[in-house]
Amino acid sequence: MKNADIKSYITGLDTRNLVDKAETKLIEIFIKKDLKPGDPIPKETELAEAMGVSRTVIRESLTRLKAMDIIEAKKHKGTVIKSPNFFSVLQKSLIPNIIDENTLKDFFELRLVLEIGMADLLVSRVTPDDIKNLEKIIAREPEKSEHVLFDIEHEIKFHSRLYQISGNDSLIRFQNLLLPIFNYAYKAGLMQIPIKKSQYCSHRHLVEMLRDGDAEKLRNGMRAHLDNHFRRIYMLAEAAKGIQVH
Image (cartoon, rainbow, N blue to C red; front, side, top):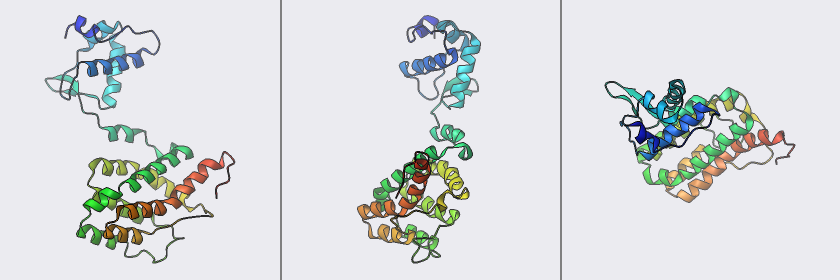
């Protein structure tokens, strides 16, 4: 690729945050040239000259893009476009111990939305063997468990199985991504905060709904099942604002 060719895809850079600006311009080039995974990108010298910045700036920008899984080095091909691994990038920034209560609440809200939204997938894809596996998981669950705080491993095992049943690889990977957040919430005692009002639906009831094949009923059941967890996190986030939650 000639310098003139590169220049046709970019405008001049200002002197503020050159690495940030160069990173943005690099992505613009990739998009405008319709580069696909495996396609080589221009060399550092060409990019530096075309943008009017040093090779150091270009090198640091490319390093960032490598960390984001947007490009990678290939033997005999140089640096090429890569299909980004969204989950790998996000996982690097999910450090439970430094996540504040509001962000933690956001993740639990996300879990709430995902697991309620899975109802149609679960009903359409569940098999008799899946039901048997879920029944084994809940075998030791009390008949009336409104006030029982499930063991974290038990809880994760049950809900992980639901994600597996969904058959959606991205959902499964995203759930695995959030597991450290859930572990932290339980181990830190966040899920033991008492609440005055609650709705409740046990794992046992959810399995019955899944066996019946009623997606709407399962959605409502999952909402009730997760409500207690969600409200505890909500209380933590709102406490700092002086809002009374009932």
